[in-house]
Each structure stands twice: as structure tokens, then as C-alpha cells.
Figure 1 (cartoon, helix red, strand yellow):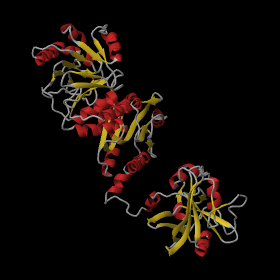
Figure 2 (figure 1 turned 180 degrees about the vertical axis):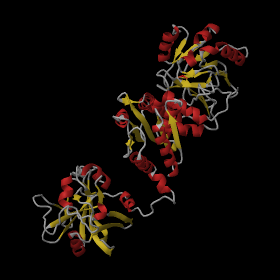
Figure 3 (figure 1 turned 60 degrees about the vertical axis):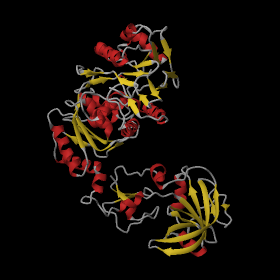
Figure 4 (figure 1 turned 45 degrees about the horizontal axis):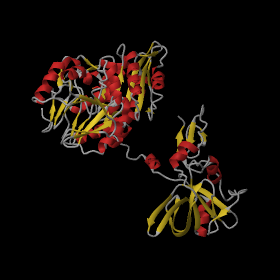
Length: 596
Ligand code: FEO
């Protein structure tokens, strides 16, 4: 096979191998690729597996067409590529081996020789001229071993990528590239995402037309797609929409729950549901799918006060490959002391950026009405976005969508002429840049609304992420009509005479009201900027940050009722009156949620 005028394929197909690397099923065999570059000098790129010595040497001899090889370039020392170094060097006593220093150490360990008198050690950025072709070497540690080099030929724009971009399967079998490349990637280099990202960065600086890997086909037309997938895989991104359910089942009851869940997920619009029986299906395929989809359901039984062995093995495969950035849900089955969910969650504890589903399904031996209801709740939770996307199932009047609008948090200061006042607002927005116009909305029930409407001036102080809850309590949970919110503090004043915060604020704007609009519950003030000062470079506090990090967690344990989402006030009672107003922050019933 000709890769270019000067580059020939001399690799072999292996249909005898039972398990690649002693563990991966390869029903379509395996290819061990090797290439010959013919120029003024000739270079052989890697050897092949030990079972193909003569076939490979025959291929080489034919491609050499009477010439002798000058160099044997060893990019990777794993025996599927290095096993024939000795045979080659014996056959071609004038050839020189080109490899990294680490590769030569491994050569001695594997084959008892480091070829000290016939070797050329190369590293990052080194080059080797063959004539028209100049080869540049780049280190690619841990893709897939530490000694790995990849090689770039600038003449024909070819990247010899070692194990990178390889796949399972012999070259004489037609099959989808992505499927077996993904299984190969996550099985073999999945742990080393950061190192693959580093290699992709190096590759992005090169003009590459052809990739010649050590396994799988030579890549040309599909290169863009291949690089896109490698970027997703190595950054642990989600490649495909859908949900994977991985399960084990001893007597079929867990399987029954899994089948029901799969049906529910499909019915709720999940675009793809993949179900894997970990005791029977290919483990590498299961690992590949866990990294392919963004949501994973793990269903298993409690077993020997632990979990069923294939599930344990599966989770171990995931954690050792840096499983991350996904949503995980659990179904556990146990006849007397179910603890599988807790055990599975514990095993995943060290993984980065996992979101655990709120609903965990507990089966006590077999499904009953309670666990079936939980299955429904889990399906609903996992399919929330799929349900919302479909016209037929979407709730088109879900006003909690309003809470997803991003806001900052500010202290608005004013003065009634007797004392300075301040309140917390989130509805501040620049609405024009020429001129700079700021819109500020204030609840009409607030004293500040009354004051600003009369005076026509205010300051907006942008709060920073280090502002403690006491700032919100002081300015937000009491009225300036009766409280002096600046009492006991040294007041800093802007040119308009109103206070600004010297602490917990990164900037303030002095505003002159130009227009007022009654917009129902609130009054909207459209304002011109009269002074603008930056006080620090600390980050502005967002409403979401306040909710997650500043607002104290409400004491709801053992209580029945509703909790205010704004300040955490707890209302105890069966029903929250529709006209209820939070006594702390003055927000209405819409800002309360039931205690779970
Ligand atoms: Fe294809 Fe890492 O050996």
C-alpha cells in the first residue's frame, strides 16, 4: 500500500490474537502497522508483533526493492511494535536505531540489548534528514507509554502518531472507525487525557494531511472528525446525547427494574438508551459507553456486604480512567441490608465534577409500588431536559425559568434628608451605551423606592464575592424607615452626597434619574451616570454565588413547611398562604419552596 510516492505500508493483520494486550476482545483482529520511507536514505517506522516476523520482513524486503534500510525508528517500545527489533538488526547489520533515551533503556530490559554502537538518541524537536524528507520528533509521554515519540514528515505532511488515533481491528475488515477507536482509546489511553491534550496541542501547530498510526487505518479525509473526537475524549467531554444503564442482576429483579427504567427513559424522549449487563457484555465496550454519554445509571445488588463483583470492576475501570463531568444515578437491590448505592457512590467520591441524581431507587428483593414510583421519579429527573424540549411534554408555564436569569447583587444607597439609607437590589442593568443609561428596578413597598422617587438620585455599589451574610442582613432584611443601616460606621460619600461602600464593593455608580416607569410591583428608574468609580478588582457577587456560598443553610431538619429561597426563613405549616410575605426579606410566596 502506498501512503505517498515515498512512503509505503509494510504492516500486518493479526486474526489469530484472542485478547489484545491480554484483555481486549478483538473480534475483527488487529493491525500492527509499520511503514517504510524511501528517500536518499531509507527509514523503517517501527516493527510488528512477534508472531509476524517473517511476514513483516518479507513486506519490508519487497518495499525496499533491493535497497538496504538505513534507520529503524522506534516510536513505542510495547512489544506489539518492538518485538522484531532483534530480527531486524540481525538482518540489517548496518542499520541504526533511532529512538528516545527511555526507549533504549526499555530495549535493554525487553531484549537484552541497547545497541549502544548502532543508535541515535532523539528527543523533543530533534530532526533527521533522509534527503527530501526531514523527520521531526516530538515526545508524547503516556500516549501510551513514557518513552513514546511521534514523528512528523514535513515533505509529505505526514504524522506518524504511534498508538495515537489507533483502533482495534485488522485492516482487511471494513468497520466503523469511531466505534473501535473509542473502545481502544478509553481502554488503552483513557487515563491520560491531559497527555493526549498536550499531544493535540503540538499537532495543531503542524500542517498534517495524513496520519499514520501504529494500529488501524491511515487517516486522511476524516482527519477533521478524528481530531474533533480525540479532543472530546481526551477532555472527558460528552460525545453523544443519551443515558447509559450499566447493571448486574442475580435473579432478574434488578434487570426488571433496569428494563422498566429504559422504557420510561425512551418514553420521556431520551434520544438514546444504552443498557449493558456487566456480567455478560464486553467490559471495554461498557467503559467506552460510560465515557461517551453524559448520564450513567448504575444498578446492582448488595453482595458480601459490598457490591456485585462485575459492577465493582466496572467502577474501578472508570475511576482509574479519571471518570468525570457526568451525572450518575443509582439503583440498589438488597434483601436484608441494602448498601450498594452508598458503596457505589463512595467508590466514585474522588471523581471530579460528578452530579449525583437526587432520586436513588432502593429495591428490597423485588420491585414494589414504592420502588416503581422511585423509578418513575428517577426517569423524570434524568429526562428533565428531554421532556422540556418536546412540545407534547414540556411545561410551557414554568415560571421558575425566571430564576435562571443571571443577576448581580448591589447595595443601592439613598437619603431621605434625615439619614442615609441602603437596600439590596439585583435588578440593575446598563440598557444603553450612548449615552450610558442604567435601569434600576425597586419594589414599590421598599422605603428606598419612596425616597429615590422624591430625590431623583442614588448610588449603586457593586458587591464582591467576599461580602458576608451580615451585609445582606443589614441592608436587605430591615426597613430604612425605622432602622439606621449606616449607624456606627464611618460614611464615605460620593460627589452627590450619598454614601458608598468602601468595603465589600468593587465599584459604585452615582445615578441621576431621567425617567420613571410604574411596572407593577416595581418602579423602574432610568438613570444617567454622574460619577463612576472602581474600588477593587475583586469579583462581583452574583445572585447564584450568594445562593450557593453566602446564604446560611436553613435549619429545616425535622420541620414541615416551606423555606424562603432568598433568605432561608422557614415557614412551618401544611399550606403557605398565597399572599404570604417573608418577614425577613419581604419576598412573596413565589420565592418559597417546600421543605424536602
Ligand atoms: Fe500498540 Fe501501546 O502498543
